[in-house]
Amino acid sequence: MRPPFVRPKVADLVFRLYDRPLHPELFDVLLAKAVRRDGYTFTARLTATGHVLGWTDGRVHIEEVTATADMDLPATGKRLGHRFEASRTARCTFPGGVRYQVSSQLETLHPEQFAHVHEELALEGARKGLAFHCKSENRLSLSPLGVVIATAVPSGLSVTAYHTFPDEFSLIKTQSLIEWE
Image (cartoon, rainbow, N blue to C red):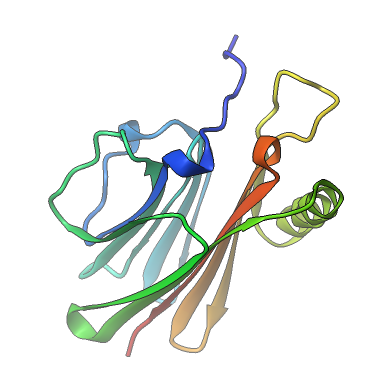
């Protein structure tokens, strides 16, 4: 039997972007899905610390990660990194005309508002993407939630990930856009 799920504190989390794949065994993967279309492969993994998103067209590889700052992640291939604070944006270019941009946001809400947003995200994630409820020890409280929604756009892929932290009434949101020529 798996031990009870414990979501790390928001203050312990970091965002990382790599230009290479990372070994899956580095992460406690809770749920995963891969999609192949239009010459690329996109893989979404919901993890105990958030997500690992991978995109490749066979020439370029992009790996986006939310992890704890103390995780032993490689320095090789790291293109971006930051802690989650109010909001941040960043961009990278890759060979072959591939462009990546990300916006990350941390929001702390009033408890009633948090409960409403949490419920909406659970429904939207189940309808449009990949969603995982991280069951907590207290069956009466909200359980941490991870959601990834990917949408194909002309010459690109838009990915939105949400992670809820019920004990802190907080929500992390990342919006990533990968574009190619």
